[in-house]
Image (cartoon, each protein chain N blue to C red):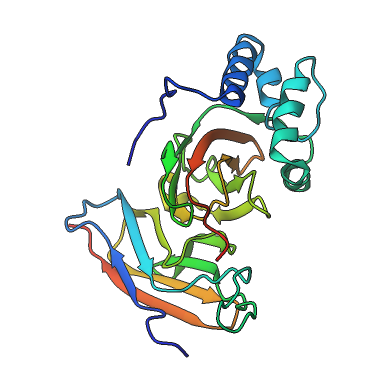
Amino acid sequence: MPKHIGKIRIRVPKHIANGEVIPIKALITHPMETGLRKNKKTGKMIPAFYINDVSVYYGGELVTHADWTIAVSANPFMTCYVKADKSAPLKIVWKDIKGGVYEKTVQIQPE
Amino acid sequence: MKEKQTQPSAVSRRQFLKQAGFASVAVMAVSTVSSMFSAEASSPLSWLGAQEAEAAGRDVREVLRANFGDRTIQPSHVTLKTPIIAENGAVVPVTIDSDLPMEAANYVKKMYIFVDQNADPFIASVDLTPASGKALYALRIKMRKTSLVRAIVETNKGVLYGDTKTVKVTIGGCGG
């Protein structure tokens, strides 16, 4: 498996009021290869390799689920929102078409 | 990133025709404006929708029809934020933002992004829940060339709302 895939950064606000609706910003390194590019040296098509499924869990419950295609940019960066009404882990899981699963958990701690 | 789209002073003829078409459509009833979104051309001013759809290519009409049939997509409650010009079509930041509530009985359950001029106009969709708290989703997408971008949201009651923006792409983003 090539390196530099699946490096994850999740950003949540530093101070969270109880019940506040907060932005979750998440970045993952991934080539999001479309399958439409040609290797210029070999002349062969570079096979598709992209994340097609993203799930956000808060306190174990699925909050957000996304279906992505080849048209999502490489090293995908997304923003979604969560209502922070409990002290609980926030887990994001990315899955690519080759069966790769990448995940990271951060704690949401309303004050 | 530019927050709001304003019309450039020097517009191409196609842009001008689109704007003129849009301005006159805005005078008509909401149901007519919404025909610009629907794949089915059914209302008196539908030729505008057809013209726009022909410029985009048949694919997007089929994709919209496959997803939404001939359901009305109301052009309200959703804002699609995009740059006016994307220097790099491989990384175009888009944000779908809806002011609709996210409560147990009334919430946005799904958001869709389409790019008319991409080989496959369907870009991504997001399933939301009331726990999302806010119907806003931002993503960076690839655009093959200058194109209309469409954001469509669906409530748990099956009501559809949408917004569109034209993004000018100077370097396309899908090929090598």
